[in-house]
Amino acid sequence: MKALASFQNLYVGLEPYRNDNQLFGGTLSKTSPAVFGLLAALELHPTNEKAGVFAPVGGFEVVSKAFEDLALDLGVEIYYNKNVESIHNDGISYSTNNGFDDKECHFLPADCIIVNADLPYSKTTLIKKDNDTSESDEKEQQQQPKTRYDWDDNFDFSSGVLAFYWAVDKRCESLNTHNVFLISSDRSKMEKSWSAVRYNDPEAKSFEDANFPFNFYVHRASATDESAAPHGCDSLMILVPCCTLRRDENLATLDRDECIKGYREQFDDEFVSKVRGRILDRLSVLDDLDDIQSHILDEVYVTPADYANYYNLGAGTPFALSHGFGQLSLTRPGQQARDSDNILFVGASTRPGNGVPLVLLGAKQVAKKAISKIKTYA
Image (cartoon, rainbow, N blue to C red; front, side, top):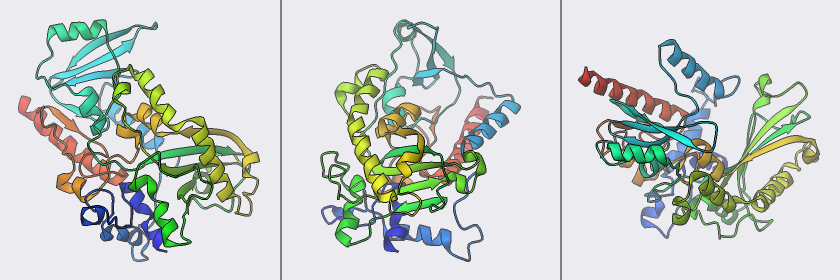
């Protein structure tokens, strides 16, 4: 029960165990304050009429589509297939591919800019600390636009994630919609299972050892959403906490494609195969999953390097900055850029924090600030 009640600490980038090697038991960085253990109890308490986890039918893609439709109905012009190269106080530089190997760069003036790329990434890679975009800089960008990937690694990050997506040709009735596979046999193994959060050290003993304990989560969306899989089939998502990307200054100087290629080597096929094998072994103890491997029709897996590439996430972690006291509430990066009056941040690495509810609350706050700024220009 202790393991189950503390698993949600993972989503805020913390571990539930005291770290005696750090000040205040590690609560300033990676150890969760005891009060965080109440989160699961509050969600499941019988007096909570909205207890549980709610998700939209069709997946979270339908939420993005709903926001897009609303924006278009209100007359918003959306630029598709453009790549933001840099952000300035008075606008953004973006590139378009002309169909060949070359790119064309353009400058779009703006009175207010809301950045929803991850804050540690955007501060380092995108935002320029000049107040104006000079003609010479713009001309140089038009001639040689270079897309990069880098991040500020001075922050404490949540754990990385290795995620598997399986299309299965049978129903996995032994699984619920949400399933957590925990190590709880003894205190020592329970603490080791949180190594990805505590140490974030790829050289530490981990999946190399078949007996190394680790926790993982399985989401069977088709158990409650019939649109998630064809009749008689299932779709499974397996989330495994792992280390984040380790920043490499040499990779940071390369073109983005080459940079991401280098970071993918930190989570190579051999590593992914070992983790997959451990998961299959753990799942095989369930009645109808002893032969699950032979029923997997297709697989897609996503490593921290993929998360970095797809979503511009610092250190490649989808859970963003951790929530130790050193990055909680007022100590978490603010929504207003310090060096640029017209730039606002939104997302999991800024206030109020990560998770869908908090990110949406933050988006509402940023929207109000943006409207207030724009009104001053009227």
